[in-house]
Image 1 (tube, helix red, strand yellow):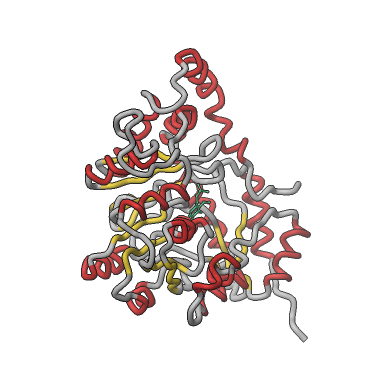
Image 2: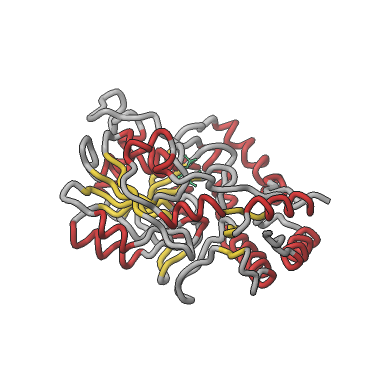
Length: 371
Ligand SMILES: Cc1ncc(COP(=O)(O)O)c(C=O)c1O
């Protein structure tokens, strides 16, 4: 039995019947873009996070890009973001002609190191993007402090963090903008691309709604340069169904993660990334990622055991071609993570036998002795 890294059908199967039933109604009403399904999803997603406004868009990358525009980020401005994240975190910054300034991350959870962020602030800093990497909450109090003192925007990249929380507040609802992706592999994954932005201020919500729809509020009369960045109603329909089971599914992810953690206790060669914080914070456990001291050995072991895995992320952002010109200084923790990270299967569709097999394999892993 090979355990796939991800089984989307197993994850989505429970929604299949109600989705197709509802899709027929949407099809007959032909409300494909905008309309009641989209508005209901925006309302329900906002409510689930305690945020006053949600603006649904076409992807997580777009959510970040439009947030940067609304935050006033433009040519020559600097935006601080982690050196270790998915490349999509950085696209909006360069789209705006701004300069990505990379800060290092922390070894325990892979999230931004607030001390390094403080060191990287200059007069030109316009925004900070904090990523809740693998679903683990970034240190929002410290980052909020820095942002408030310097009057700069704090943007949360919560693309991997649906349903997680930090000190009792939903991830994505804490900063000035909370950006989500609904790419199919996410905890709240759709049937294609999709994204959303949470904001507290109505003026930001209005601007973002305009930006996503050709810059117009009144049809055919754009007030500014706009984008076609809307979410389809079909995605909204599916996401509404899935939203109902997000928290129980996250709970299941956590149960599985705790079993993996136990299996890896006292194994200095394979160290899991874990959330920092007390019981008032909750990881969304999007991914279970370990640092393997001898990654090639560990990968060979997983393959031999039939355990699906993925190396992410194999490179830091400042080392990637599109971002290389912006690299400055060193990012030792990000480098270490890129060298050692491996993600193991973690999704709510995992069967008991599959979990048991992963646990057993992890317990038995011994790093080969080096000569
Ligand atoms: C941390 C992070 N940021 C941004 C994105 C971009 O989201 P999308 O793929 O929906 O554009 C992703 C998703 O892959 C992500 O994981």
